Image (cartoon, rainbow over all chains, first blue to last red; front, side, top):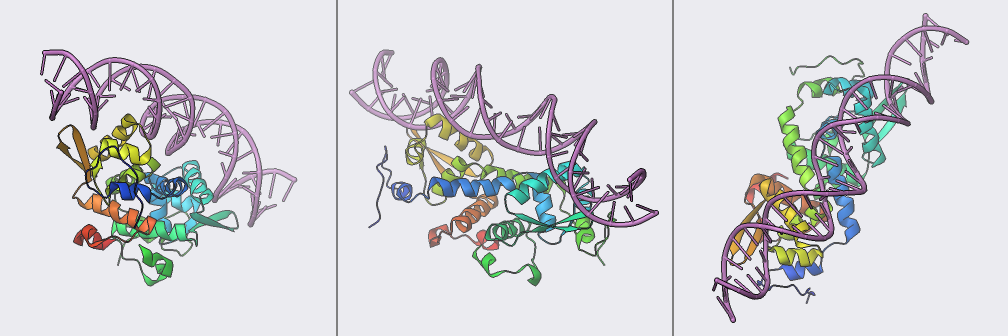
Length: 130
Length: 130
DNA sequence: TAATCAATTAAACGTTTGTTTAATTGATTA
DNA sequence: TAATCAATTAAACAAACGTTTAATTGATTA
C-alpha cells in the first residue's frame, strides 16, 4: 500500500497519495529550467531551426531577421544549458543540437508541438519515450 | 520544389529551406507562451498534481507547503491561460485540468518528462499526437 | 445576522529577463 | 601586419515575474 499525506480536506481524491509521491524539488527545478529555455519565442525559433539543420550565427540571425548580439546571447544560454554544441569552422562558429537526453526531449517536444514529421535522420532510440 | 531564402553564407545545409518554411510569428508566440506556463517550478508542481487528480486551493497549498495567495496566484495564471477549469463546491473552489487540446499537450509533455505511466483514465485521442 | 472558513485581490518589493549600442576578441587573408 | 569579417562580451535599461503581507470578497452555518 502506498503512503498518503494528511490534507486539510478529504474529498476522496487521489491528491493525498499524489502528494506523498511528489517528485523531489530538484527534479521540478531541473524540468522547469528546461521549459524555461523554450519559453522564449526567439530561443524556440532557434531550436526549431537547429532541430533540423545546423549553421553559423550569421545565418541563424539572417533566417530570423535578428541582430548578431541578440542571437548570440540566446545561443550562449542554450549552449550553457547543454542543449547546443558548437564547432568552429574558420571565422565562423557552427551551432548544432547537442547529443544528450535533454536535447532529444526538447527536440521531441518541439516536433510534437509544431506537428512536424521528423525524418529518419532525426530518429534516436531515447526519443521514443515521448 | 520548395522555396529557399537567400542567406549570407552557403554551407549546403537545409537552413535556407527551413528559413523559408519557418512557422509564423504568432505560432511561435503561442507555443512559447504555453512553455512559459510550465517554466515555473510551482506551476509545474500544480500541473503535475492536477494532471492526475483534482482538488481545492487549500489542499493544493498543503500538498506543496505553500501559502494560499501564492498558490491562488498561479492557479489564476493557469486558469486565465485556459489550462485549468474550476468548479465551486460550497466554500471551496475545485481546480481541474481543462478539456482542451493545449491542456492535453501539456499533460503529455509532463507525463513524458517525468516518465509517468498514465492510466486509462488519462487517455484521450488528441493526446496520441505527442 | 454575526462568525467562520475559503479564496481572491492589491500593493509593494526585489529579482530576473531580453534587447540595444558599443567595444572587444578570434581567425583569416590581402 | 594591417584589414576584414565573425562572434562575443559588457553596460544599460525597461519590462515582466513571483512572493509576501494585508485587506477583501464569497459562501456557509451557528
